[in-house]
Length: 90
Image (cartoon, rainbow, N blue to C red):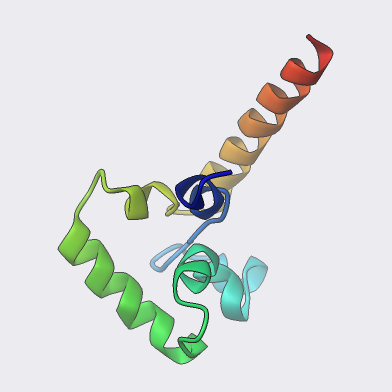
């Protein structure tokens, strides 16, 4: 996998997703960002995410790893799993 593909294989689920703190505690909300900046302390990831999002803008590769909530993320995981499964059977 390329570095970009590895990054896109991870996810960010930043606020304001309502239930995210319950199902994605601590570092899971900024997991993709953590892979980009592994030495950054967790308490700084939210601000780093806001700054990167504002600077890079919508449609950037960075934003492609961000999801607004659990249901969108599960949909993405399900569709990527189905694609991988269908390739194996071919």
